[in-house]
View 1 (cartoon, rainbow, N blue to C red):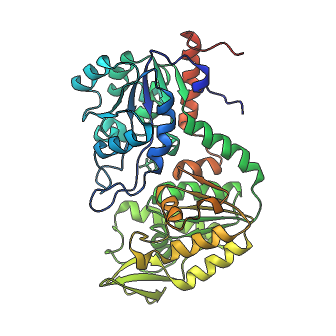
View 2 (cartoon, helix red, strand yellow):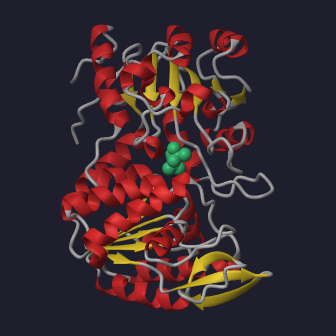
View 3 (cartoon, rainbow, N blue to C red):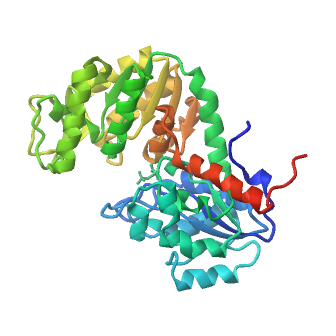
Length: 413
Ligand code: 3PG
């Protein structure tokens, strides 16, 4: 496939100082353990190829304030296992310690920088031009010859470490970006109707944005809402969700308002839970909407809702599933996620299962080879399927021009 940007095949890599942005943001357990190594394994493919370069790796992990916002120190050990060469971790990103270590690198060395989101600049979402003006980009750019972007799961984010190097460093895509984009570009025109989205997980704002786009473009026939989207849509339908389930802040209120607008406009597209499972002192109790035991936390969609979802899955031409429907790490609340994944893996529909948590659940079922495609990306994949632009691809196009100027491009045979 011809891309609008350069890949590792197009440039000279030997002896070069290469800055690689990957996305090894992984599910983290309550004890701080990395629960799934898939993204780290995928990131290692590009790094293995850079054996004759001096390599620095950057990634984010979690979001400030969330329990999975941790250091990348443990990731280094796992990365090392998959790359097959030492990966040295440094708890710095652009300070003097990090910069002096970069200058000491020899060919074949790999240095992993600390979680990019420890630095406030990285939390902003800004234009490529504004990201290019950040301190991160200004401090690191002079140290490198080339920028490799392999962070496909974060392709929908426009943050400094992802897009900011477009104007200062020649940029090429890594193997994961290449692989995912190729697969998705080939698969999208083949999607058959009815197209069913099953959306769970915790990233409410992102998912609402995608749903709004999908309902406008009409590239969807059914949207099933679970995870933390379920309370938002239930409240929008008039159910009173208690504050032990959701933080009743302005953000929640505005999400509920967006859900109300969507329901007023195209309610027939949505499947909203008719029952939920709450956690009564460790016991799963299914209760119908209207009789939710509000003093206990909602941790899964209910079993009647699961039956309705299975019915939609059986009629679907294409299924796109993203994010777990409940707290799947706790066995009694993993039922909806697991039942639905089993049904998807048995279905003849084109099926895409995406995002760290859901693909982890699919692997637990040993059903990865029974779906059409699993993607390392969650939000980025949904943005792509909804037809939205991916900022890292725009940045790679700009970064191609630098490579042309600096004569880093190999002659095409
Ligand atoms: C993801 O897991 O979707 C990506 O790593 C992006 O993470 P974010 O939603 O916290 O930006």
